[in-house]
Image 1 (cartoon, rainbow over the protein chains, first blue to last red):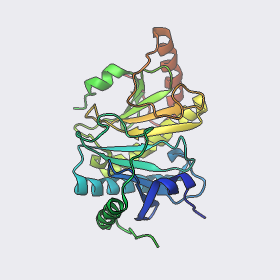
Image 2: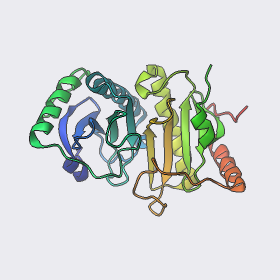
Image 3: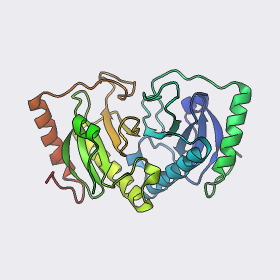
Length: 141
Length: 141
């Protein structure tokens, strides 16, 4: 049974599911910031995924990257598997702009700045609409 | 013609080539830290690689991760495509330990601490020996 790590639950809002990954919005209003979490129990690192899952993961990373590009026209996408604090494999995909508050530094190991309620709802809605471009994407059940 | 970005040349020592990626040692003695650079001209983001190259990239990430695990027994591997300063796709793979100098913060957006000459040569030699486990790996020509 796949269950999302409690630290990931606390930091995110659900967007939906691709075939392999649960897709979450990280709750930091400064950046369009997705997490992709492979729905596989007990996996902490990319190297521990089955080969077929690794291939699907990189495709879903590319698909989600395409959605962020289409919506936000980032200067750069930052893609990372870190997991130093949450022991469940999750891939960050962050749309970065040269005028964003932390550019050119990385966004990790920094406090989050949370959305207000309306801002979060609007960001979730625009991302969910964009993510329907991913084959097999479904909204949260 | 593939040519390594000058910022990557300046920060690294060459280890060798896998079928898709040039593999470099990042010159920071605090962490076993690899860069994988797909030998494709003009590619800045994972999403811009051909699908066949993306699949090979994630396999080479897994293979290089396995080498770091075998050599250094890390608590966690940090894997990232950032590229905010060097406009050539390169994947960081960093072996992290809970007693390393920056744990649990990320290693990026920090000054490097360089190896001395003997330390660099020793690290390069042990990694090159480990990397021969990757199918098709060749030492620098």
